[in-house]
Image 1 (cartoon, rainbow, N blue to C red):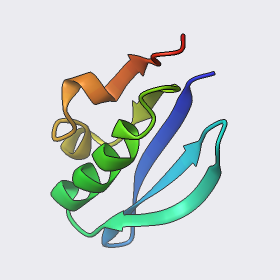
Image 2 (tube, rainbow, N blue to C red; image 1 turned 30 degrees about the horizontal axis):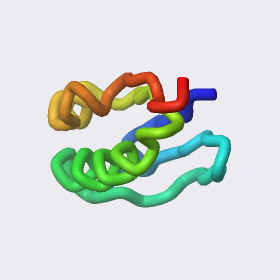
Image 3 (cartoon, rainbow, N blue to C red; image 1 turned 45 degrees about the vertical axis):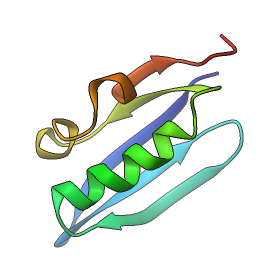
Length: 77
């Protein structure tokens, strides 16, 4: 099963929801700027390489996340 990472703007910053086999996290702050949000979520997505992941985010954040981390199949798929 692929993980799903959803990033959204809340107030003046960004939060993420992560739905994964290993963990479910809701409403976790990931930065005040699009760059901070993209950096934090890219770090998390890189850790999901075995599982695979899909990402949903505002355009200003999504364009800063490396293409190979936005939507990928896991190594165990």
